[in-house]
Length: 362
Ligand SMILES: NC(=O)c1ccc[n+]([C@@H]2O[C@H](COP(=O)([O-])OP(=O)(O)OC[C@H]3O[C@@H](n4cnc5c(N)ncnc54)[C@H](O)[C@@H]3O)[C@@H](O)[C@H]2O)c1
Image (cartoon, rainbow, N blue to C red; front, side, top):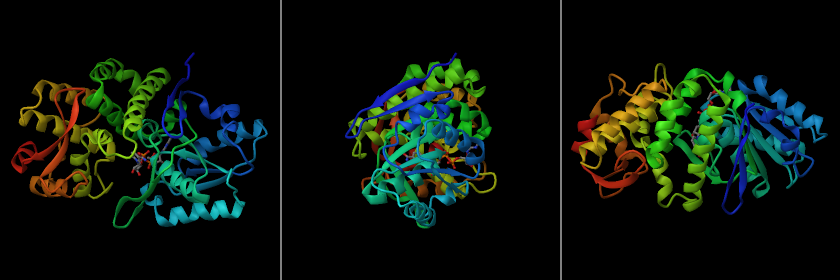
């Protein structure tokens, strides 16, 4: 039988992350997070019909306060000022007090939006993350960043607000579309690439089990990824240094996403763009004489085994992509800054990368 992996995230407000099957049915563990009389369960139109009932039943069986369910439209567009206002209206309608608790059941969109509402209501109430995408389990639900988008850009308004606990029920991943699972696997591989080369070998050996949604393989991958993210965030909670390593592959990914128009027809999703971006960053590292080409090749082969296409999508103009990388948050006055590596598992930030080197790998 599969077991649950648990780990503690240290920091100003320590919390536990649990990963494994059946966690959404563990009413005692969920109810233990509720301190007051008010519970808001936030989900989206895809996830609520599949998984919200289990959470409601599990809490009811413990005699916990009955949650109010807020179901958002699915997709990034919900992470808006309107979505934020709608959640504040829900909390107001409940008469939510300072000891109220928000459960965020869904992917990163639900987690970011519900998290931001929890951060703002009465200057901060309890938040429990119930991530249902692999990306949310290994990335967005850990580390305390919450945000909404504005028409001017993604994640422009937000707050740091750590959850009280994270329950990553691997059983929910059975209903996740294949593309979303693979996108999450790209972020999992990123932890191997930046900090843990043996994890890349482990992923290689377990690729088939992960793609088959084996609970044990998934729980191990989630726990190991979260341990890495938690350690980095504990050392650099506000992204003044090391936390930026988590952006390996992301400068190229953001450029590709922006050029394709976010999630337009046939466009790569974020994780797919990160897979391409990581291979480009590895190639750029080789072009600058930092790392062997064999490591870039090894990463490419692993990502392909995980079902990810690592080729730059056809039809993208290298000059346009270069211009986009200049707009990235990581560009400074002294030239382009990239998260590159000295080889698998050894990422670092490199400033002053010449345009010609970037163009050559594009
Ligand atoms: N806070 C952070 O540190 C952080 C880090 C990375 C990403 N993010 C944010 O996360 C968001 C992306 O998250 P995401 O990739 O999880 O996207 P998402 O929340 O949009 O979920 C992807 C799709 O899968 C559906 N879905 C979710 N769980 C499902 C399940 N178990 N079964 C069936 N369908 C399911 C959703 O309805 C949606 O259509 C972005 O807004 C990004 O900015 C935040």
